[in-house]
Amino acid sequence: MHFPFLTDAFLGALEETGATPARGWGPCHLRDGDAFLPLYARNGSRGEYVFDFAWADAYERNGLPYYPKLVTAIPFTPVVGPRWRGHWRAEELWEGVRERVREQGASGWHLLFPDRPAREALAELPLIEREACHFRWFNRDYPDFDAFLGTFNSRKRKSVRRERRRVAEQGLTVERLTGAAIEPRHWRLFYECYANTYLVRGQLPYLNEVFFRRLAERLGDQVLLVLASDGDEQVAAGLYLFDDRALYGRYWGSVREYDALHFEVCYYQGIEFAIERGLAEFDPGVQGEHKILRGFEPVLTYSLHWLAEPAFHEAVADFCRREAEHVRAYRDEARTLLPYRADQAGTGSGEGASPR
Image (cartoon, rainbow, N blue to C red; front, side):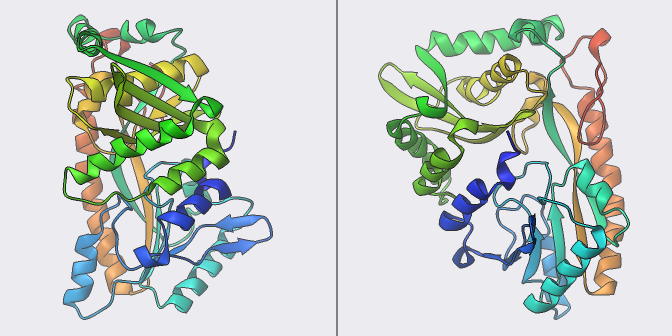
């Protein structure tokens, strides 16, 4: 299975429904035969998850336009992975990007959440590297969920088991569906839960129901849907995608609040699925320090940036160097909160972790 987020199926569904020019995602992709680099001309930064609002403000204070900017990213999807298909020589890619910058009158180029091979391929280009800290679960050949919990210290292990019992004690049932087992009615109920998560905060959801239905049609075999029910009523849902290597937690929603249900639908069910499928990693999405106590380890993620205005490029480079010191200090502090026993302690750095 291919990395799902860079496929024509996923990007096409996004560009047909949510990542449209009217919503600030103007596609101006680079193509060279089979090689493809997603590029979007953006008039804002919402939905990117790499926060550059202060940079935009600095441009405005100096009488310069920050938007449009060009972004290589998967819209609304802060998942680390490859950022182009096919073979690009770095020099050819760089020439193509700068040509697009000129055509669009853009302030620069931003490549978000590249994996290590992508970063290494572009290492000689004059790009600023920015760091952030996300949380990820790593499968160390656990035969089952209990074996994973066996690596926790006693107090934290009991806490997880208590959370899982609490879901059942409230009369809730949870099921996992993939592929053809996900019926149209499930998507309708999922979308109700997903949209409600935004509406209770007074926001409109990024994506509409049509997107999810097209995703099901085109990538259904790489979709996992976790549904929670209270009797005959579906009350919560979580949507994941997966490939041969990893599971990616993407969207969650509920129509009512239940104790510990978010942890069950978004984390524990995902971990069980990853173990059953032999997947190496589980990326549950951005933010959320509560992930640490449930076995998700802090790792560094990256974005690459180039600003055409030399003075701002240097200023942003200096900012990112200083910011990285704080990001790494935060990662190191977060490591001390992991629930693993002392003989199981230790994680890797960068996008992956070393076996303990």
